[in-house]
Image 1 (cartoon, one colour):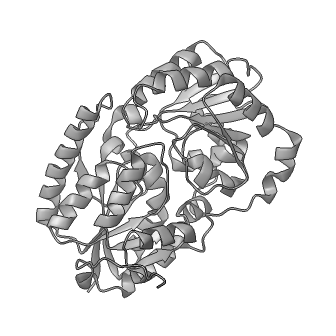
Image 2 (cartoon, rainbow, N blue to C red):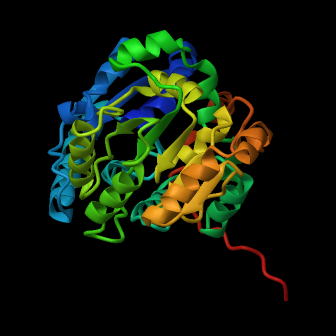
Image 3 (cartoon, rainbow, N blue to C red):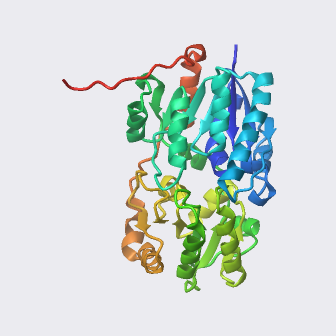
Length: 388
């Protein structure tokens, strides 16, 4: 009898990582898979990225519409409560054998709470990581404790999950799902990318993504203004801005970027690229700027330097492609100079990628085939052995 597995996705970046796992699961007769779409996937201002899932021909078992007004904690909590209520209705009817979640988005807390009450085990991907500059860190750790199987991107992260009291027999280091996502993504030519974007790339190109530092409320306006000020003199570089995620003050960042774009002919704003265009674009740009985890987790696969600004990603294991700096105009300008320096360009193909895995999706499916889901819901705290 096939195992019924529900994969939950709430954002463009998350689905891009899950795509290979979902497709392989659909082709495997040992599984009956279904996808539940939540959050920003269903919002026009985030690009209606559910259309990317539809184009893949993936079976969408549920669409949970929640109000995504990302201006305040109150709005986020309203969204979370509605997500919990709607997922309750889905679980009451569907009763899957296992739920798969990835990452650290606040919407996933609602998913996990509902699953726990229904005694449905949870498999969590990309736990054990650290990004202490945002509340995502606390959410990720909470999801670890609510989950029953763990698939991490690095051995150090696997150890952290075990430190949190999770049984080592349920923790698997498989590498980052970006390994599969990038390897299996359709590769677009430069001309095709330009056609999709609606503008030409230049001789120099930078991809910019900035998210709010959620542990520093009110900082987003200053951070975005500092960044565009630092970029204002880069007239010889084509600047490609992508939208901030659905965190408080994300709209503030987007509006500052849009205003900058309207006044600078070398700058462009794209709400959502979609994972395949995003990966293709990464092959043509010179590097990334901002504070997205993509600069740390995905840029090494393309041997691209990434300027990581501020504390949002503080604590993540980094390859030598990452250039860290503060939200100061002078620091960002120096980092751009370093990105384009002959030393960085000469060394970038020698970066050791700490997140590369060997078919992470295949490893996950192998575990899911072998594990008895019925015994997972009972969890006991795993105590580390201490020296006497």
